[in-house]
Length: 503
Ligand code: GDP
Ligand code: IMO
Ligand code: MG
Image: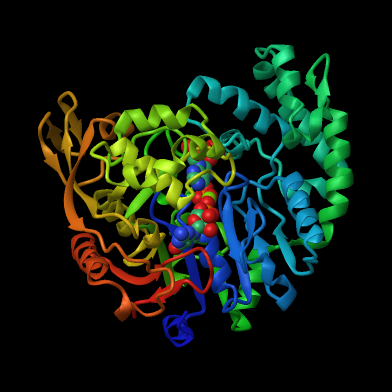
C-alpha cells in the first residue's frame, strides 16, 4: 500500500465514513480496520449483530458483528464506540469481548452510548419465528422487532439495565403487550427457539408465559450490567468534546444502502437506515460534519444475502432459489471446486455465479449462507451514489482476475404488467435507467449489459494505480462516467496492504 497516497486522501479531513453502496458484505470491515490507523475514534452508528465484518491481519481472520472493526487498534489507544442507533445486544458484545480476550486483545477503550435501543429476548424470538412467514431471510438477530418497538415507543434503552426498578417496570409493561403475540406461538416451538445460544440457551423460557421476566431482569441488570457499566457514555457530549479536541473520527457503516429502511428494496430490507444519513445520526453527528465518505462498492460483481429482487443476479431466480436452500460453503466446494475453470467460461450465468462465489469466498459472515451474486449493477449504483456521494472505493476486483469477459448492467428492461411509478406509466418492454426501489417492480426488471474484456492477470500484488491492467482502467473510466462518480480506492485483496489509491 502506498502510504503517501493514503495520507494524501485523508489530508485535511477530521471525520470520514465507510458506507456500503450495495446489499452489504462489500468489505467495510477491511476499510474500517485500514482507516483505524488514521482515526482516534471509531464509531458504529447503525444496525446490530446482523452485520458480519471481516478483518484479515497477517492471515488471521476476525469477524465482528457488533463491536466496531477498529477494535484491534484498541491496544494503540484507539477508542471504539457503539452508537446511539445501534440495535444493542449486550450478550453479543460480551461474547465478542470474551473472544478478543481469548486472542490476547484486552479492550480498554470501548464506549457505549447510553441511549442505544436494547435487544430483548422477545425481539430475537419473534424475528426467528416471524421470518418463516415473511420469508425475507433475516439474520435472526432480532433487528426488525427491535426497531419496530423503537418506532412504536416501546423500547428499552441501554441505560435502563443499570436501574433495576426502571428496567423491571418497563419490561413488565411492554410484556403485557407482547403476551398477545406470544400466546399465538406453540409452546414447543417457543421452547426450541429459546434454547438457542443467542437466547442464552433456554435461560429465559417459562412454561406458563413462554418468557420468564424475572430471569430476564436478573440477566440484564445483573451479569450484563456488571460487565458493561464502565463503558457507558453520553455519545453527543463525547463527540462534541472529541471535535473540540481535534480528534480524527471514523464512522463504520453496517449493511448497505440497498438494504436501508429508507432507500432499500421494499420489504426485503433491514430496519435501520444504512446510508450516510443514518450512520451520521447514529454516531451523534450531522451528515454535514462528515468530510469524506468511502462509498464501498464491490466490483465488478455484487452480492445479496437473503431474499429480494436482484436484477443482475447470475442465473436469476435459479440462483435465488438455490441460495435459499441454505447450502453450505463446504457442500458447494465439494461439488464444484474441481470444475472452477470450466464454470468460469460457462454460457450458463448460474455456473458463472458459482465460480465467482467460490473465488470470492462469498458465504455469509453472520449466517454462513451462500451469498447470491451477479454482475455489478450501475443502475443501482447510481441510486446509491445520489445518497452517499460520489467517492467510490472498489473492492474484490481481484476476484475476477481469471475471467475472459466481464459485464456491467447499464439499464433494465421492464417485463411486468403496466404500472404507475413516480409519474411514469411503465409498460412491458420499456427500457429504464433508474432504480425503482419497490420490489414488486424491481422483480420484473431484466438486466441489459455492456461487455468488457477481462484482464486475465493476477493483480493482488499491484501497489499503484498506474500498474493496473488497461482492461481494468477502461472499466473504471466507463463506470465513473456512467454513474457520475469518481473511483478513489481499489482493493485487490483482503489484507490492509492490498489497497491501491487512484488519487
Ligand atoms: P463487510 O460486511 O462489508 O465488512 O464485508 P464482509 O466482511 O461480510 O465480506 C467481505 C469479505 O471480503 C471478507 O471476507 C473480506 O476479508 C474480503 N475482502 C475485502 N476486501 C477484499 C478484496 O479486495 N479482495 C478480496 N479477495 N477479498 C476482500
Ligand atoms: P454487513 O454489515 C448482508 C440482510 C439479511 C436480510 C435482510 C434483513 O455485514 O454488510 P435483518 O436481520 O437485518 O432483519 O435482515 O438484510 N442483511 C445483510 N446482508 N450484510 C449485512 O450486514 C446484512 N445485515 C442484514 O440477509 O436479507
Ligand atoms: Mg458482512
